[in-house]
Length: 462
Image (cartoon, rainbow, N blue to C red; front, side, top):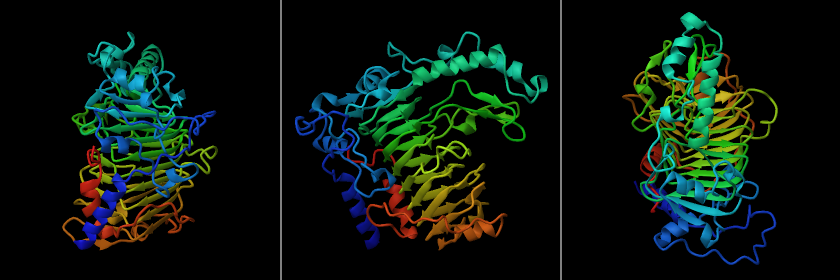
């Protein structure tokens, strides 16, 4: 227990220490020497909240520390420090116009207070799916038109499908919140972003911390009759999406479907009506991302790293570090990886529940290094079930442990366990060794004791 206490003390010190803001990622043409030093945030914020708002990613803390590092909005001037409580205030703080906010590279710190709902209308009332639907769309009409028994096993087309696409465009304009470069978004205690997608696309240098992300539901899922043997419903929106961006730090957040879980959705055309996509997807050539100390609760699809098997622009990209995250009761993509060099260490997995598919997906040209993770397995789940071959060839696994249902914790060779049951075999050498790690790598046996209590939102002293 002394070792656990020592590690916890070191981790607490790491979380509360605020490195001095760096000059990296300042907008082009900015004369940092001529700028006034950033002043304190509004007086409603505690000194520690102000300090954490200006905290930068520590040197060596995963892939997001590569290159210029990740400093977010740490150099923000006093007029670019905001506390927001509504959707409208959030959009204003991010630049003023959701359609163009991704192009706003002014350093800014945005504190989220309370719950902000992506379905909030201009007058503050909450919209619903009917409000966002195109006049030509209704679910009842869609189900009647594209029932496979009537329409067949071909992709939907025609007026109702076109109306669904227009409806998706309406929802995207409203519930997708666009983030620009040089931004820190940090939650005060109890902060929650619900019913929205935080979109980080074509930007660099973004920090997102201490927020619960809840129920980014799709009002207008698409029926894909050729997806799998019997077709599937597919949805549009992630809770957080990182695309074509780099130097992004996602830390101490909680990702959940809240009171609208996938398990509660109806069945249409013999398949679950899927209204959620990923929790945190990193795709479309994104790279240099560190995902640390987050909690992923009871979701189906959690994290997709790389969106296509097509060899091309993703080569040399999609480099991501995952450490000290808690995956609790989720079913797949923990993560699923294509192309990237992905470092997965000191994560705690609680694998249970009907519908579990796999933990780590080994995809096309992926190079995953999985070290000192701990997997607690529910009944009927074996170590051989933890990896899945998505046309990959290799994964390095070292120092991982499992606790079988009803059994004692023990070391496990994940590749050997997988290869004993599946063909073709995976190679145990992904061809690289991570070097960007901050602080000690915990023995796998200690990971549940440290990560369980400390991962997720509302663990930072805000």
